[in-house]
Length: 455
Ligand code: UD1
Ligand code: CA
Image 1: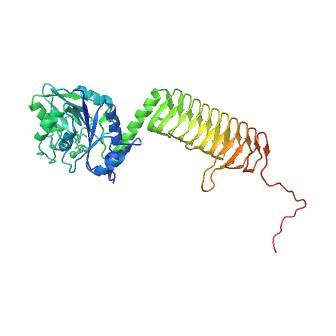
Image 2: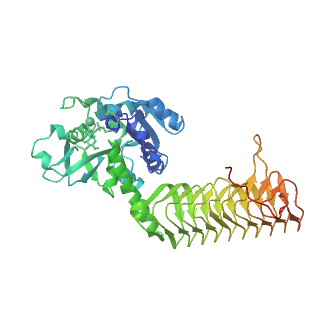
Image 3: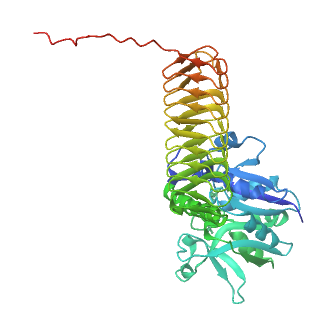
């Protein structure tokens, strides 16, 4: 048996979320809960994924498209057993089937693999955990030999059974054939009038099967989300896990409780990240990167030795080694900063290629521009890249100097060693080595008297 089918239950209404959106589309670490589960399932070789949806099925379909998984609709939510029954026609013969939950987002591939390893023709696998506060969960009943005998739902349990701290996580694994055989035997004769998937345990026992109990690595793996506060609490748990991973790989965090990662973050060693930084999408950091407080970095690569000062925002950009950015720099998509560049406070760049050693230190907008090496852009310089209809490019050659408060009206080129006088408006090519003065000539009027106040 090498085939694996993974059924993800996601039909519940999620009433306590008080949302128009299906619960499983609510995000943890920037990614829908269902995506977390699908990603864990995708780590299992050749697994087929079947998602059982009910409320908001069309929204789930719209979010993922047709290729991501087989979608099964459970129009009426008659219980977890009924939900799996709806998926039955999609299961492959001779497959091991793992049942997961769309609102239990942090299940790991390791635990799924451990479940699969515990299943064969004689055994079914059940994921259980000991909880200090077992209230609300189905309790695991074991016989005198310690074998799992049954699961009793909270609402059906006796006072003695409520004392049991080992609970059902809901995650179960068994073969397609056994599911097909046993699900029709499940009745809804219980406190909730639902078809309980958990009844399969007792049926398995009655048919002479044993149940292999498997435990997750961490309790967060089996934490289910019913409300926004539970989601926020799990987010913190998960963020601490991500922070820990980052620290283990050699990056220091000023405060792991004030670190947020929504996506993939890879980092070399000896980086330092100050408080309240947010990393989104795919971000890679080199080594010896220093990031000040309150920075937001999305889909970017940051080279070795870069210093990013407080309140800097970087999106879809590449930052060369030993660059210094911020405080308060805004690096927009398509920016490529060379090594040893400096982009200072209140500077905005967009689609700007900046050569090694160049500096844009204060209060500038540089967009659709290509700067050579060792260019100095003075305070307040603006590339006027937009004529109201089209975008145009500005090119600045190596070693050029742009005086403060210059306006570069694109398309325009300043060739290498160009020198722009402060306060100039430049709208035609400045040849190599030229000084361009594009401003009104100063007049001084001698003996000028200030106006006096009218009587
Ligand atoms: C279930 C287990 C319980 C376990 C707990 C762990 C059963 C009967 N009980 O209880 O032993 O301790 O999970 O969290 O299985 N769903 C559907 N269709 C349905 C009903 C539910 O897709 O008809 C989905 C829900 O969206 C949810 C999941 O199944 O994601 C669990 O359903 P829920 O009714 O919340 O089960 P619990 O009462 O939590
Ligand atoms: Ca229920």
